[in-house]
Length: 206
Image (tube, rainbow, N blue to C red; front, side):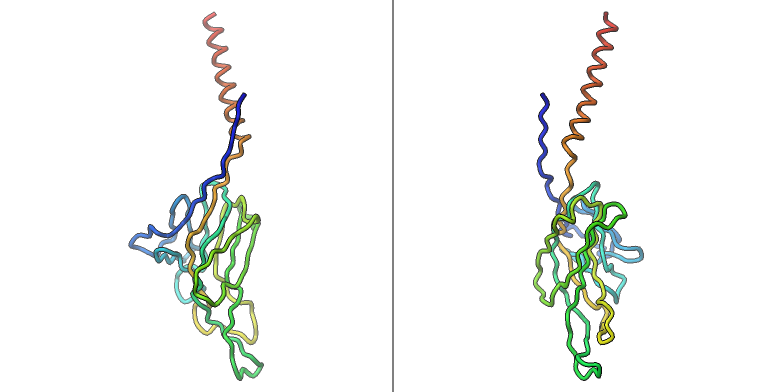
């Protein structure tokens, strides 16, 4: 009798700890994870993190993470780096406030299909914190983390570029293990092939 057991795949972690002398790369690979910048942008890698901003430089406003096969997106570390958004308190703009806004967009894809999305306000603090991704971000082919502009508002405007920016670290992805049934099917084909070879050999000797 054949017995097969599958264990949970060990998660891979991109720490940006192996950045070389050129911090402005279009792609970066570590621990089986590859981060890629959009066309005509570069990954602003400052060891040990990736910096993302939405303007004012050629640096990436988002990065796409992938592995050799399907994976579950587990979590990443986010460090807020500030907002530059001004809001009129009245229509006459006699006074202003400087609010935060939903500026972090996380998207999970299977092939070309968007299957999971998370938009949130990173907050106005500066302390790094972990963003945990749940079940919707399972069995992905790619994960995108990006910084986005505020929703249009006649009383609001960006007073600097970038309008907001943050840094990313410890991107944690867990490869999806090959189903046990697939392994058993493959082993069965091997056994059938071996049995056929033995029959041919016995027939030839007889």
